[in-house]
View 1 (cartoon, rainbow, N blue to C red):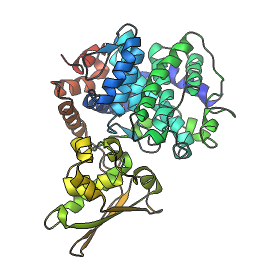
View 2 (view 1 turned 120 degrees about the vertical axis):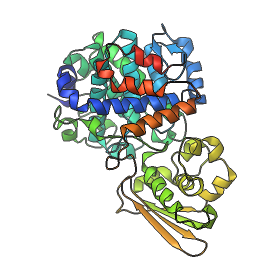
View 3 (view 1 turned 135 degrees about the horizontal axis):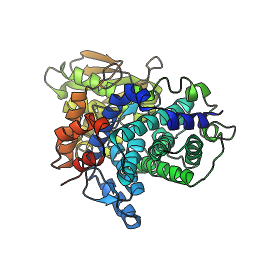
View 4 (view 1 turned 60 degrees about the vertical axis):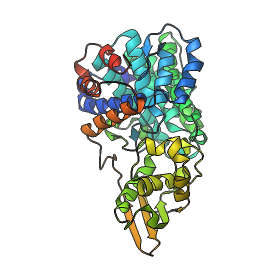
Length: 443
């Protein structure tokens, strides 16, 4: 039996009791998802996306998080996945650099609202969707991303299909077919990271995951080895897949346990740079004007993603130099520090020109060394091997609630953060998803 069918068996057959150890992490992931979606709900990219999608929407069954409008479930899944991913503030599975929740939680919530589902239904689907997308990602990492495939999008569609198939109660063969149909729709490229086109492919992963499930529900069939076959998805979009990573310990270990949450709205590999610079700022005798030069050393991934000119706020969120400016010049790294007004500020741009970066092959992904030279000639160095928010230094539940409050403030709405958090922490007791979704829409 191939991996695709084994995935179908797991998603169809696993019981709630087997998922209970992962439930709290699923709640944390969902809370973080709602926070980031609320925070960017009125971004111009969302307004433009809504303008493009709304005229073609079917019956408005599903909520847009942080907004008053509703759309059909596929349109809502598309836009909610975009908003959750837009600010580079969403959760991260570090082994693959997949952002698991955006392409999975968005279709789960849209379908659950349209068709009716309990809190347990939603949490089960989320855990299983994350499991499948991250296992597929593990099997093709790191070559898949290095080739230019945006792994959140390309693997997220498998999670979306698995999660929505679980929610609709498809049997194992039908779930395997849904995954096979999803394999023919997987797309997304890294080159688009500095633009909203990157987020479109995340939205498509959510929307097309539902579509794959609905086709399978109607009887559509796919190749039994669509993911791992000789001419299947994995070999077409990467190197020889790691089949052990696909199915090893399947059902015994859970990928959601490896999830992390960002304290800063920037690419995950830049967090160690920010942490190091915030620590170095305390060593400036008179302030940022003391800085003559900054050298950042990190892995090849850090340089490949972040050694760039900053032309807009999206560049800033994946820029080594801007991460340094946030830590040393601005002393903070929140959404305001990565907004367009800050990214294009001449003073910030001038400070970024003090920064140089080079590869240190001994540095693991996610680590950074920052060496700061002052005009006085003094040198100060800070090494961060594990950034705040990593598995080694995880954000607490209270941190995630604080992040929710911050994102609500960014939205400018009047959402009740305490009520939203309480609804998420108690979701496994909820007979319906409706009360939670009412809380994340404007009155």
